[in-house]
Amino acid sequence: MNAARMDHTLSVAAAVGVNGLIFVLMFVAGLSTTPPTIEELPHVMAEMVELPRLGDVPPSPKALPRIIKAPAPPPPETDAVSLSREKEEEFEKKKEEKKKRELAEKKLRLENERKKRDELKRKKREERERRKKTMAAALRNLDDPRADDEDTPGFEKGNEAGTSTDPNTLRNKQVYLTTVSHMLGRFFDVPAVIPPDIRKKLSCEVSFRLDKRGKLKGSPRLVRSSGNKFFDEAALRTVRKFGPGSQLKLPLPKDPKLRKAILREGLSPRMKGK
Image (cartoon, rainbow, N blue to C red; front, side, top):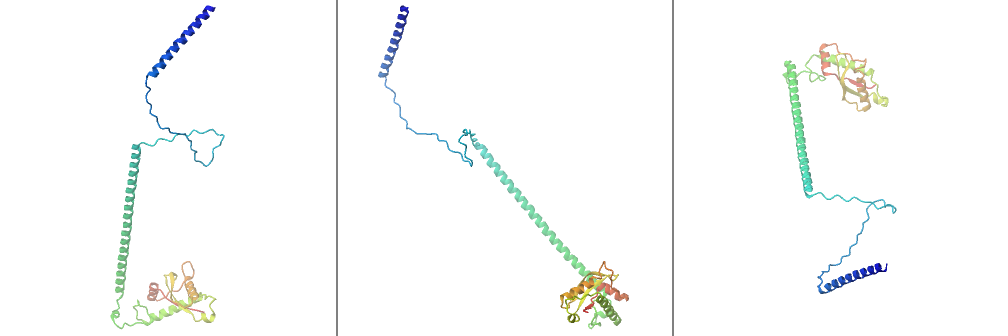
């Protein structure tokens, strides 16, 4: 047992001696070799600082730190150039569409103006034709040789379009107008706001036309005013009572010529206050 321990002690001593010799040799070699020159670099003090995130709600101090996804890398330069080209093409396309739209609107406006001019010309042409026909009809009615005389016979209360010089014609017309005035007076309601002494002094003339049944044709119009608005309006209302839808009608003259003239020209009876 002592021999084994002795051998172990010798082995350890031999190992320590060999290692010590190697260390001495390495130390001597280091002293004989010139160490390399190392360039000193400037010292930079850097510290990682975490910036706070912008937000309306402050984070909870108990919450764990969130892992934020890194932002996407910027698009390559080729993609940026392509996107810019697409915007330019889109801008040019919109500009071309706007130009086409403006041209279409201008064309439509010119077309409407042309139609208006054509319509105005058509109306003027129709008006000229109507005047020619009216003039021709008037010339056809001038069959009385006395119409060319400078001092044409007639009546003070006659009609400009009249051709008759028979006194009976004028007398018959005056009698007929008196009859119509009396009949209208039966249905003439003078406004009560007009005092009786003034009402008796008022009178007006209302012009209107009749159809073959003696009914009012069209709308009556005031030819000569009484000077009182209420009186004139009441006179027009009275004539309207003989219009369509009413059982009232005015008599027509028995004389065929006078009857034809009344239906063609109308009449303007005088309406007096009561």
